[in-house]
Image (cartoon, rainbow, N blue to C red; front, side):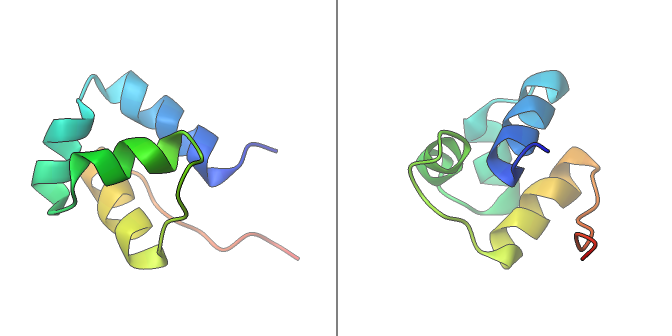
Length: 64
C-alpha cells in the first residue's frame, strides 16, 4: 500500500498544479509541501486535509 506522501505526490503531479500554487491556495509554504512529498518532513492532519481538499481528494481512516 502506498503511503500518504507517495499518494499526494502522485495526485499533485496528476493535477498539473505546482507546489507553489498548492501552497498559495492552501496557505502553506510551498517548500513545506515539497519537503512532505519527498518524505523529508511529517505533515499534520490539518495540512493534509487542506491539500487533499484542494486536489479534490478525500482523507479516509485506514481500516484496522
